[in-house]
Image (tube, rainbow, N blue to C red):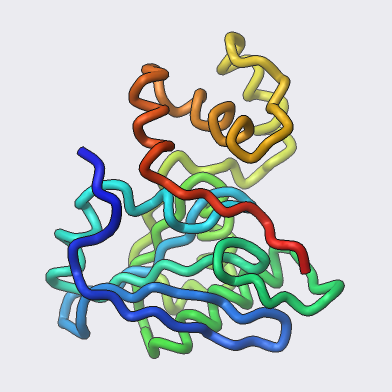
Length: 197
């Protein structure tokens, strides 16, 4: 079941940092339920692929949910030249998002690479993470994961393609058994890869 966007009103904005302006989308209103910050996969993708069904619509009825585009991706395109893309910078960005909304405790959802980021943030700031939810998460040891993928998916060609569309089709081939369902999913998501700084 695919939706083009959440069926709730949204608040769009920017969290300014010295290195980057982090674009965000906020859904829901302050409530007693634990708020959620979502770290999407990639690296290099916007958060748009995360909102292709109604799960967030349902959750945002009782809590605030924040999506943000990681530095240099999606709408977070104002990136200071030579800014770091290291994990410490990504952790600082996520902390800036948390601070913007004043969440003392929140549930942190990490998908794919975002799971790797979520684990790193949780290790750096355990006092703020009430719940850690990992989905299709990258391993804490990325080098091991890269070596294991060909063994887990021997039918997936190592040729990742040259265009963003080909690369996304290749990546999501490992997540969908049905090429038809994969293509329907990708048709509903508008991916944005790293912006040029």
